[in-house]
Length: 102
Image (cartoon, rainbow, N blue to C red; front, side, top):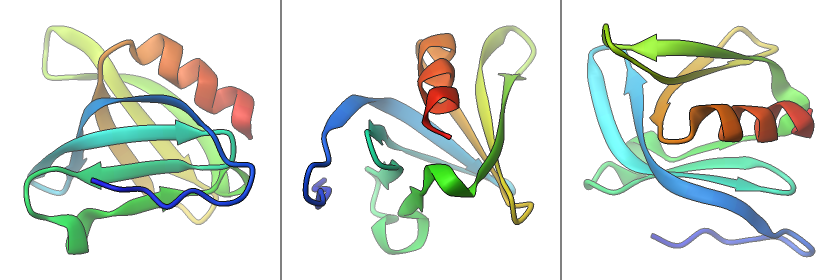
């Protein structure tokens, strides 16, 4: 799993994540850099589920539950209305980092 970083771009945080889209769950890595957010799938869906979200496109980040017991969900809402739901460890830390980006 390789992410091509741009000039002066640095990885701030990266960790295992699950991206929920419709009825699909896609395992991969959520990667925060100082310039954008990436999701890179790890289970062969690279062409379909590669994501790149620019901070200027983010409207809000919603902390949510995935399932009934665990508060480990982040819903990233873009200004165009698209929503991206991720299950992550250390949700509060990652969510606060994303909130500081936009």
